[in-house]
Length: 490
Image 1 (cartoon, one colour):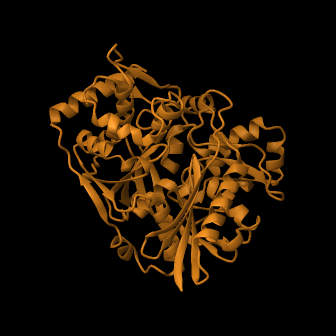
Image 2 (cartoon, rainbow, N blue to C red; image 1 turned 60 degrees about the vertical axis):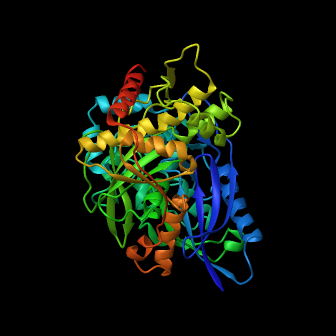
Image 3 (cartoon, rainbow, N blue to C red; image 1 turned 90 degrees about the vertical axis):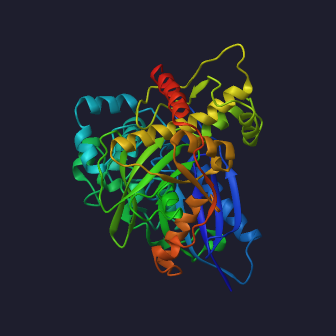
């Protein structure tokens, strides 16, 4: 009998079900995109029903088409887009409003008021986060304040809140489980990362009833048995982690100082700081990397809101390319110092700027500028933003010398070489770039007992290609100075 772990990877633009064997090899993948909704400027929403239906159907397809009679799924793991906020009825499971996505900026004015009232030092000291529309608390409050009747229903204990992992657990268990893990809880602005508890003072500050909140578990834990998953019924969910923490785990960055950078819709650079929750002085985030056996491991994180979404915009918005794969040959035929800078602040700027009101722009256009320069500038913008994070980490006294990368964009060799060049650092691409799904498979496998230790998992990691910096420091500094100038013009 062959044994497998099924990972549910619920992302910002699509849901995927990935079946791994116990050596971390992919046996089957199914993916479905779902619609994005933009009801107002800076607003981003998903329909919870779309999230659930795409998860359910991708799991069904994997089990129906790729699974033999002698195969066994020993555990299920869930990894998810973080901070995205859903509130639903405790009895019926019916959402009271669309999911408000992590990219959404509708609470920017409220966040500004909270900062002006000097609440950020308290929030930062407890959560490791900054007051920003990115996080869940202000989204929860917006729903309670703006959807008629929800605050009253919440006060009566009729409603529950969850990030996407909690919502999927609820659906998979037929409403029997209302839980999350410590990594997702640490992104809400309501969880004290030092005490590992929901914080009463923060709940009062944001005016959110405690009855809404899920139970917080370890990242590798028994989250409950599936009853509404078709062929998965009877299998337990044994691993849950937010997507960036899952990628750190999948990259086996278990040692202090190891770092990974994920290039999906956004870009997230995360560095393991061990059992110390280091507080950044340069507007990076302190977060829970993972929690095992009740013991948290912490990380410093820089969050960029728009990375792969830039290429999506060049494809779907400007229609300069018809497929993302066309970007690499265009860049290969373009000098790196073409003079154009694209700042993709479509939903504001994340770390280290944290400017929710910034909007995207293209600088340096001339009569000679064509499609290839704009597309190349879009690719370079992802690398320049990573450089911003590297600089902030350096100022905090931390510098990842080697970076393990993952996500859809890392298949682009030109981008990876430019990334190594602009960082002046080694970039390692693993044999398996689906590290987000792999990480939560590892977490589930630890709880299932199929893996004995972190050391055993670390031995499974393989480097597919290493990119070494080839650009001179003077060229690197000159190109990056142009980027900084462009950002400051926004």
